[in-house]
Amino acid sequence: MEIRSLDPGDIDAAHDLQVRAFGPKSGDNMRARTLRTVEEGRMLGVYDGPRLIASAFYHALDQWWHGRPVPMGGVAGVCVSPEDRGRGVGRRLAAALLDLMEGRPLSALFPATAPVYRAVGYEHAGAQHLLTLPPEPLRTLAAGPVKVRRAGPADAAEVTALMRRLHAEARHNGPIDRGETFMRQVLEDEKVFAYLADDGFLAYGWDGGPEALAVHRCVAGSPETARALWAVVGSGSSTALTVRACVEPDDPLLWLLRDRSEDEVRRVTWMLRVLDAPAAVAARGFPEGVTAEVSLVVEDETRPRNAGAWRLTVGGGEGRLERDSGAREAVHLPAGGLAALYAGVPVATLRRAGLAAGGEAADPVLDAVFAGTPYMLDYF
Image (tube, rainbow, N blue to C red):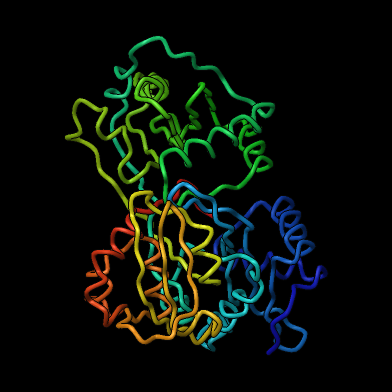
């Protein structure tokens, strides 16, 4: 069994694997995207002799952590031929992808099966939050003169810059940045209705039929703009029966609505992996008012350079992770525990889940340092 960059001549074989794993895809578009991914060195294949038996790739993304973008590899398309499942192929492929993403401090993925990824250091970190509610309460939200206009492909740069500004100002944790090119593709899609304000952006469309609307993102920097954008969605209340919206876990909409008695939220969880611990800490934002120094000991068999004793220092909104003698009492974390801590999972939860041990006096400090509820608005 050999794991290496996918051969461009195996695009059709990779397409067959993905269809068998995830169902039919748009053939020509999928092949073009796969070829581009191969050419950019972001895709691996697993070969048993000449036969391609598994493949996977990653998206080159940024992910916002306390208002700062951190380079992240978004793992996707992990598929193993049905007749070769159960041989440990998926785990070996997941481990190989960690090396392929060299230079990116973090990696994230939406797991089809968590044990495979936990075995190489990923752990549950956050979720997509899908809110379902009736459209009528949204229709009546608009208040005040907020200028909202339709957005098109020519607005891609402005929308991208706006989203980045809003994530930074709100000190968001978890949203991904796919760049201007991706945003242009979104705005070119005739099934997406996009609207832009000075401090807000909305993208939504019909959710498979005329009875439901899907809000892909609605982000605003002020209550007036949030009201105006959500009211645009609510204007479809004469036709649509429901609205399904991808929102922040503490989205302002939940406080703007006069009545929330009929909403429901579904969570789609994602996992995080710290690939380069010092770089991940240095790139991340931290609360301005928190000053801390904590000793950590990390166990990481798959990424040995993350392992060992560290001193975490935080101050002025920045952090650094430096090698430590380990003389002081330290908090011990496996690779998955480090990922979950980075994502803001309370240390008490990590201890009860067997993902942290020792150094109990540091718990309140670590909770303050990494506080946050991470989320994503995109599925990849």
